[in-house]
Amino acid sequence: MNIEPSIPTSKNPPEQFQGDVWLDAIALPHEGDQRMVVATVRFAPGARTAWHSHARGQYLRVTQGVARFGDRDGNIVEVHAGQTLYTPPGQDHWHAAAPGCFMEHIAMLENADDPAGTTMWKEHVTDAEYEGGQA
Image 1 (cartoon, rainbow, N blue to C red):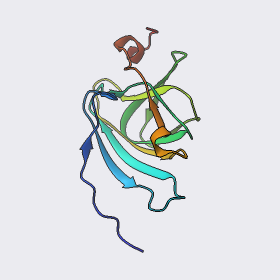
Image 2: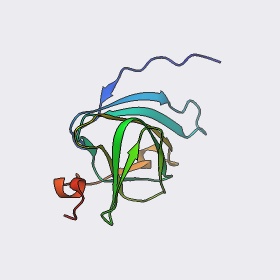
Image 3: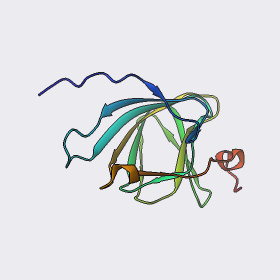
C-alpha cells in the first residue's frame, strides 16, 4: 500500500476547453494492465469542454453546482450535485458549468488499449449549442 503523491492542479488547455477549467488527478494507472482514470474537474461559470467522445465511455459525478451536458442531437441535460451521468463509448458530447455558477465533477473512465485514443477531441461547442440551439 502507498499514499499517492500529490499532483499539482493543472489548468486544462484552450484547445479542448472554453473558459477556466482546472483538473486534479485522483487515480492514474500504475501497471500496464490498469485502465482506471479518475479526476476532479472544476469549471468556472459557463466554462465548457469541446465536443469529444471516449473509447470506453465515461461516468461524471457532479459534486458541486449545476452541470450541463449536451449531445449531437441537441439534447441538454442539467445535472445537480449528487447525480451521476454516464456517456456510452463513442458518443459525442460536451460538459459545462451552467451559467452563473461554478461546477465540479469527478470524471471516471478507462483508458483505451492505446491511452492516446482514450478521448477523441473535436471542435469547440458554440454559444448556440451551449444555450440549447443547434448550430
